[in-house]
Length: 291
Image (cartoon, rainbow, N blue to C red; front, side):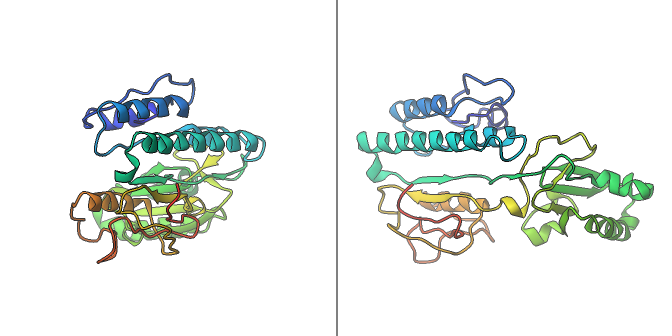
């Protein structure tokens, strides 16, 4: 049940049941949360799948639309209140239909939000302009708060080239850090270097005008998220709150453990001997018995 058109396209027909988001709002390309929740309740009443994933897009889209980080704060808070109401509708529906006692409900976000003023942008492509032999051998994928850098030049030059790129990028006042993907638990697809910007800054690559949106994510400033596990199922540890760190990457092995699936080596899941829904979370993302 995906409110965003692009998410619907990414997942394609791989789900047993799916809903095509509608009505789609102009510019944002997503369906309002109320419409998404209506479709979710119809899904529970109809096919009643064993597992359902729902994306509510209002908070994300309102956050990205805020051009200053301050003037539309009331709109962001209104979106949060509306989404909270929709989640409440879902919980109430599970209870009213007798499904709550066998349900596990996870509520979380993929990121929080940071804002930058127009002048606080970092373009790694511009940083490398003075070194054309580096600029021509680096491909950049930007995510606002992070730039992924890929070496595309001659293999013998990779080590020295990446070292020089790292040194130049680190020197920019808007750059927080430059990391090797493996140090961030990322795979080969994340490139050869991952650069994070500081809070209040954003990356814009390959051109200065490529990322005009001040609403920003992808860097450490936007890591804290809400992360709750609830439900009437005996799998849920009632009233449990942990200060251990959790990541969105931990969601899949946790869901898999509910269905008796084995996590792949290195995946973070529940501690041995604990009920399957006892999860780790940051202090900003408590795991408890209320969603």
